[in-house]
Length: 337
Image 1: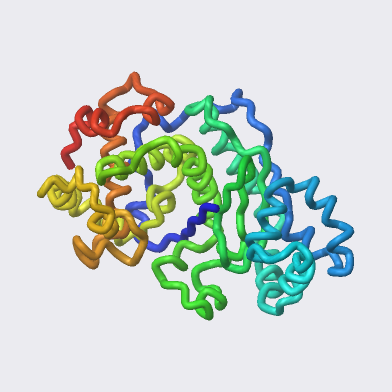
Image 2: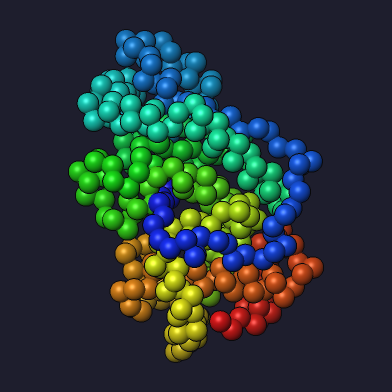
């Protein structure tokens, strides 16, 4: 299962996207994709009396398919024996904290809010279908309560969204669980759609490339974020990459210095995972560069390289980009911040 989180704080100057103009203004009105229908496993579970769990299970199994099995055995029951599964589910829904979180999510994700998310997801997948016509789309979308274990999940052809991980950065449970601020600031509803699309793209593409050096890692995530640009052409860069306004300012101000750092000492071709970890891991900052440098800085730089490549190669479409070698992208991008 994949998971991602997000919330934005920062200067409005950097809320605008810096992506290529050719991704904006694309007419997807004639693109045909199934309308997003968010199935509510959360409502089904919490509205059913526990004494009926076992008799209702076949209906849930039919409705949710393999996602239901994963929810029951890996999220609720953590792989315990089958005969304890309904007891585990009963304990889950009757837990005072879990019940409270479910009620909180109902207040935040009203019927109106859910409809808006459905419309935004449908529009995003129309853009994906336009730019990446061969990419498989989710066959179902499921909302659930995970007990603070997962944000976005991808299981087979299902895209899952866990409401309890998007309750707002100041939620009392995040404080109780001692989640770090660099994570909770992105855990609100503004990030649901971007995180969901990002999660699906990783689900589809992370099997296809060998991330055996820093450059390959950079360009893989650069492609991913460019595909996210294509799917969400009007969404701020800061939301897509989960940076604050201050962090975005740092990236713009020190772009030359960051690139110079990566091109020194053959760092782009470094294959030592231990040495690469500071540039690719999440955290409050990239420690090996500075305490002001945002985390996952290699992914950000890769994103800018891919954008430069696409701006200089107008005939290359997004689908062709996704199969282009990292070294070719770097060479033809002529990236010079």
